[in-house]
Length: 578
Image (tube, one colour):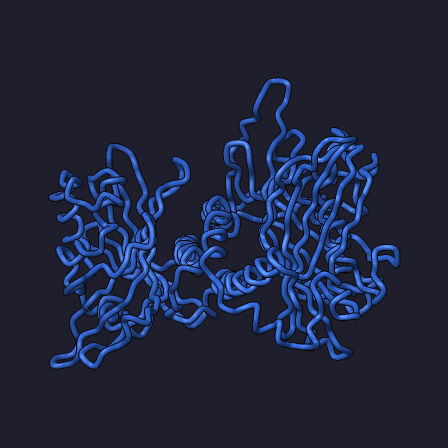
């Protein structure tokens, strides 16, 4: 869908940064828009309409994408959006958008929204989102986008994470469909027994919009933000019919635009409440387009979550829903599965790394998000710039970093082995005991997919006569997205019901660890090993950090020798890793 590019109320200059070399730097893709909320933008409660906010967000993001591409761009998809608060009349909406990373013809744009009260001088976060834009074809053919060059630590981190988010988008629909087809945690008959349940048919809404020139850009394509606003409007009406009150939009699931819409289209918007939970409800919305007697074209489908807030801004209890036969029952059950998936995404992906417990339960419904969190945490740790060199011996360096009351360490070395060979040899944790004396034994519990494996690792006791430790580790492997990226092997603890702690071992936990493998010239490779020193890990490295031992050197010297000796033995590795 084309995105809105009309002139906003106020566009500001990009932020200025002072780099380490003293030079000033402005991100030329950064666009800032400020809008004061007027009564025409607000709903019955005097709060900014979510549809209007979506239009402004889409407009700002498109301006950023077009600055980078140098040509017209269209909105391809928008990731999950969670609205943390509402915005009132008279307050100012500040929207910032910038391109995080460009791929072949698509790019990720990060969007942050904050609210400003002009009278109290307070500012607070409203939401954060990531949108994917595609550069339109020109007369010369398909556009090849130039690469984004990150300059600041924050830009480097978002650049690196953008590749992982892109990977998740590409497999998102397939995994969601698999989960929905196999997940049914609540039977429809339970709801049919409630006499006060509201018929889902009562919440059905269908509305038609004629796409006029003000709704489209100079290439006569409908603004993506306008379509999102229309969809939010019918979803709100549907939600209102269930609760007989004014609902508040809390979140929108990730969605993709399936096709274009143009001036003259009749846009058919359909909404219905799929399921009502105790304090929230899911509304499904579909947008289709047609002209004349042609068949309907699918434009977009989205799932929106609403709440009804009382005078104290607390969620109210909602009526139950009675699904219609056949399709209604399917939507009812799928909404339950999506709620579970939604909680996993919010819990595992959206929260700060320090808020994620050391061991997160693993199951097929959250494996994609755990893998994303695993790799993202390693990338964020690797992006830190304030590492302190603690000791160095024979080109093996030990660095430490203390942040948020947590000690992290990094070991760095170079080997004369190709990066891909290093990646393949280090990917199989069962071979680590050949060079790391902390790994007594390692066994594969399950191969989740070709990129993720769960291992059980046994380590010796650090005290004489004490118990050893065991770890249940998720290993997530990533090849470079392009030539400027490293190979990654990320590790974190997970829990599995079939492998509870035992009396024979103390259960250790790893929050974030792994390898970053960089290809350098002449078949030389830089290996960086990272670890956030949890209580289960710290005893093994504390003497090195204190300068009382150099066992880290012996371990990574042994690792270098292992890689040199086995660089030609790739045929013995599991097929899934080759």
